[in-house]
Length: 373
Image (cartoon, rainbow, N blue to C red):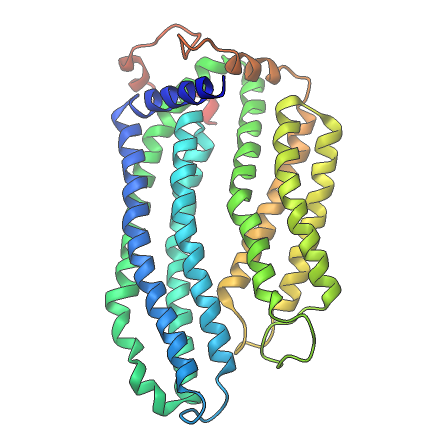
């Protein structure tokens, strides 16, 4: 039965990928972006990794002061590179999932997060430039051996341009898919405006859960690594430190995030009110945890890790949205949406759409549908 389920889902995915030229182009663009961007990001990662090793080799003797700050900050930057590579894998899965479920909200979100990723790559470049200039003051003799600034045009700039170009292409394709999937949703839900609004709220909430798998859980794990270096106040001042009780609290919250993802998805599918109440309560705890980490992360300008601070703001904002939509989907329970969802799950394998097949010509005529409003 498990193999049959995998085969059925695979066939359904292939059918929806081949549904139109727009769906095929969208998937291919996402895959090519992942391949090219990952290759370029690996080059940046290796350069930064080698720069960090070179700093360790230059001390002692070459530098004026102990380069502990430079070592830690470059370690943080290489962790950023790993996150960027992980994001490319995530966005491919997110893209296939959006096509499989024909989620219009998720399609538009893919475009937005790709532009955000491109902007964060600029922040990453600025951090490397700042690190290089600060290290120049700490170790003027060793800076000549590194020559990091000569690699910006060949490593960082191509990555930024690539991400911007792919984000633009995906935005164009997203608009076409938004119109196409909007009509498919109209066929699934019907012309009831209130039911369309309820279904749209459901789609947004499920999408937020999927985003949380990478951004919120990833942020929590990254925070364990960032502050895991400093479990006692005996460390030097410029390395990030949080009290041990706060660190242990964050470890508990990290496990709670995993539980919350599972509970949130199951509760909304089965319309379990108690489960959604627990989910909302857990989101409050998660937001509190991220706010505490933000408090300890914002130090003086010289030692602040800008990417991590931005990441924390994104995590807090995403957690707040998840909390709000947890409340909204709970208020929509017992209003008939579950019947539509169960009907979709119980579809026979022989026919992926219980509604009459509508010609492609009919799909192209309308520019907007009421589900899009």
